[in-house]
Amino acid sequence: MLAVALPGIISHFDSDIGTAGWLMTGYLLALAVIQPVAGKLGDRYGRRPFMLGGLAVFGLVSLGAALAPNLPFLIAMRTMQAVSGAIVFPNGAGLLRQLIPADRRARAFGTMGAILSLAAALGPPLGGLIVAIGGWRAIFLVNIPVVLAALVLAWREIPRHIPSERPPLAFDLLGALLFPLLLLGLALLVIEGRHAPSSSLLLTLVVILTGLGAAFMRRELAHPDPVFQPRFFANRGFAAATIGVAASNLGSYTVLLAVPILLARRGGWTSLESGLVLALISAPMVVCAALGGRLADMWGRRPPVLLGSVMLAASLAPLAIDPGLTGAAFYACLLLSGAGLGLGQAGLQTSAVESVAPEHAGVAAGLFSTCRYIGSFTGSIALARLLDGGVGLEGFQALFIVTFAGTALAVAAASMLPPRRN
Image (cartoon, rainbow, N blue to C red; front, side, top):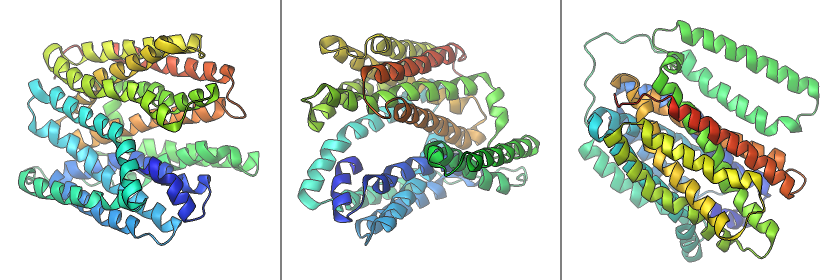
């Protein structure tokens, strides 16, 4: 909904696109960097207080955003929305891992994926209607009754935490502070690095972040219960799932960003028409996310993920060969990409959270989600670099070749998933 409201926000605060863009960028960064820490806290202290607290804060900062007197305050409230969402998401996934039996777990994740896909598809038209009726502030006010309903349901249904009889290990406070700072530093370096005043300053920042990253990894490997859990990546199922979601998101997110630009280059396409074309990706995702979850419970996690990854790669191969593709072939590629992405997501997420012990499901879900956003960031950066200075077909061809390579990596990762559910 925010994308639809952005022009009104820019006009109201007399801002520029670059500054207002932090309403989107800050949100994505906060979601990416906070989730592993939030999941770890939920693993340790129980999911109920963090889900209730995250929902309550989301409602409060939505009210703050609706009353924002200036753009910096609105950006701060929007970022706090992301922080509260990042608290809820991994603990919700951890709760599914905790409560749903293995033979129905992928179906539950598939249902969740279908609902998220449907929400993403409905966001722009619903946002347009709300903005038309009540202005841009209304898209934040509409969150409040939804949050109140969610709080009532969560209070009634989420079980209370039963502490382990074993004494808890020392909490990795330094890791919890360093991990989001490192990810944020890396993201800002990649996004803003080319605007650095000098190459020596840029090199200094790279050296500092590299050294800090090495020290962080050394600490996490030595800590008995780290936030980052590098040992998870030695697990075949977890490593394959996280690589797979990063690689598939690189391909799918880049296509979502590139298609409207490509259509604008062809001329005669309005924003509404481009949005309807993108529905060819989101609509099959809604159906296939639920189907993929059912198939993952019936056949095991690997087959639907592998099939979906192959479909996603196959959808991008024609565009990599001929980015000027038009007509039915172009629309078929978009339909196939959405179907492939939806088909594999439930199996990937289920593999990630069930590859670890139930008491670590929250941090596993957080790391999985962070890898998803890393794929999206990589795709958006590739788009900015390859299309910088023009939108000729050569740039689009290079972009689709990169995205096809990402989906080929997703196919390889899918083939490494354990054949059966855990």
